[in-house]
Length: 414
Image (cartoon, rainbow, N blue to C red; front, side, top):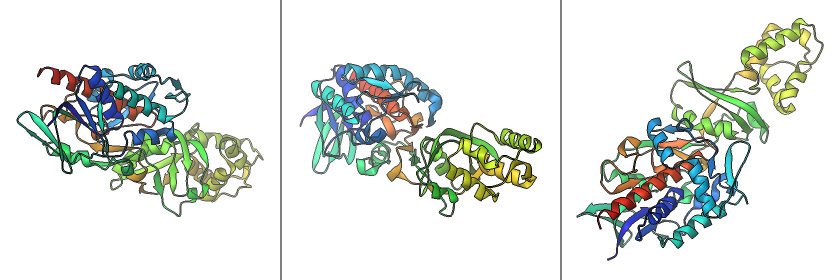
């Protein structure tokens, strides 16, 4: 039976990077096992099939979950600048968009995947598809990887099985049980970067298709917990767009806690400044329609919805606006409490929060602290980032370090 130096379980972004990194380090016996008929399904799906490869500035503060110090050290081991250079050397030139996101110049996620597969092929990585690893055991210095009736042997194993987001892509959470079989614990996974569901009776669900810049804020136990200011998209079921996606993991995590979600529809104003501006207009005796101010900042449909929720007539003029009407308008416009009923779940989640705690992994190598020769990389770990290329950067960084380290460890046995 052939014994591979390194067996990698999972052919997504982290797995492909780990395979390339290990082979580039000189390991000529790398096998990559993928349960699907092809590798990189989520790469092809990402960024609207454009693949947001990384970001202009990737910091530990852009991530949730594990220790910020751990994340910082890992990102330093393979930086966003190194990612850009890596892909350019593979023939994939990246372009920087205004929001700080890097995409392939041709806007094709397939260019990213094909470049990775081509490089892995050039390095003689043995990619074995349609082979889901269901069990891994360690005995007498070797790992046995079982898939159906087939058993594969490897000196080192890298788990890059992903989380539970988009399970149809193959990320069904199976990697967690593989890690747990070696004593690893699990922070209960939950969906992140996923749309937020609103109660059907919320008037905002009638604004499907409207997009605005907005600020979402969660208050937890009466104190400001987290804030997200970005583009917000109204849908027939609730909220999407970066502002909603970035805060969704906390909406889900705190859904049974004393937490409230508020939206400021005009983030250029705070509650106080908007209130002050309206009061100034009232004092001046302006006969201008109050609605005209809101139309300067918002689509008419949303402006009229705010007036409807606040129970203020849309033909109201500043000079006749009562104190109670002013308070209601400002409250709805700048601090409207959203009645949520959770998030859309793993089927619509771009990434998984939770996973194997990073405290059980060595940041220098991504090797397990519980099982020598076992490495973990990518979404299987309890780290999830904001939207904008951060999660791919986490995959590239952890995958590179794991592959590089596993290859160096395997070389010591020669």
